[in-house]
Length: 504
Image (cartoon, rainbow, N blue to C red; front, side, top):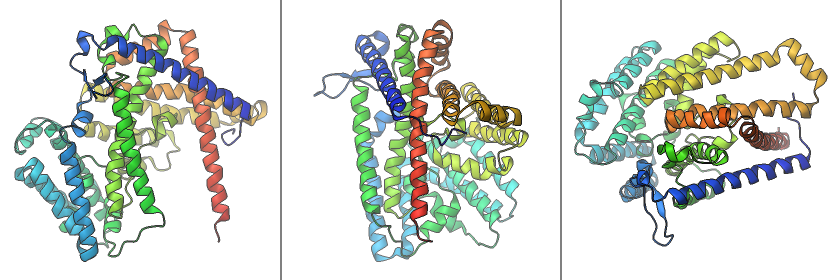
């Protein structure tokens, strides 16, 4: 009730004004804090000289981002450009062999980056899961897949297997964990799809072509085997009308996002400030709330840029990869909160939906979320921070269902229908959405930043800042949730209109 109801234009305009003003005010506080702390001793390691023509220092606390676009930039461009070039030549000359070209080029890139022994290590895991897939026992395939994943996450096996990498370089650990983890997930998907479709005879070659597709190899996103195999097996792939324009637009948007993030880091030190709790504790409440929010937004932008670049190459190869994650600003429910849509699809297909069924019953949903977050914990690497993150988000997902069931309970549903108009119902629901939004931020800030910084934010916003700061932040968030709901309502109406206009 009230979800598809429009609000007055004047009310939505007020919400936009309040949200814009609050973001500008918080941004001003962060900018002043960044300027004032640029020369602090605690900032020396992560705030360094940036672009000369801007004349400001730059936040370089995220070494992955810095490595991608400085020392490893040319290598990434060279590898992906080579893939695109050879893929285009193969598609023109022998399109039936393009999947073999993808696998051969990807394997050579892995050998050149990580060494031949690392390639043989991954081939061993691929062969092991392929042999188990021949038994057509899903539980055995999933069990071996999880065991293989654990071998890359837990000592002493992880230390032994990391020795297969040749040489040392800055991103070695990141590439090792990325290539190994995604290899196990892809092999497990292959094995489970083989069990689900016993009438289809998949070969070891199909698995290798799936696993060593270079754009997805190290950083994902992951496509389930059935989707990848169906798309890459097309002998004469055709593009939809306007697809090349959309690919160019996505590539351009990724470049703009990269430049925008670099410029942003010259003015806002959002990754460095949380590491200095003494300095962060002096921030105004509005700036501290903005700092917490901007940390999650940056993580989303980072994922969106990574998947945007990779997906651009994949779409040039006539694939339909998973979309980038949904913007954190548009999230106010735990059910839609994920930073990697590919892994989310993998978990839903093989674990969450399989255990939870329709996700309408409390007990099966609890079992499904516990199983899903247990595997997610293994994927991220078991440690105290990941345990806490998993428990908090598992609770948040289940608590949403409990509240939904309570709201649908007969007496409460009748009270809502009798005493609240549809517009008022939407406003009440948006209040809960605002509280949920900050629960999502706090629960994920634990893993993206630190427990100590999360504790500081919670103490300032909920305890020492109560009630003024607490209510002010919730009201601003409420305005944002209402604007997101309005956009969702508009998109839904447009989709319904397009469906009606389609010829039967």
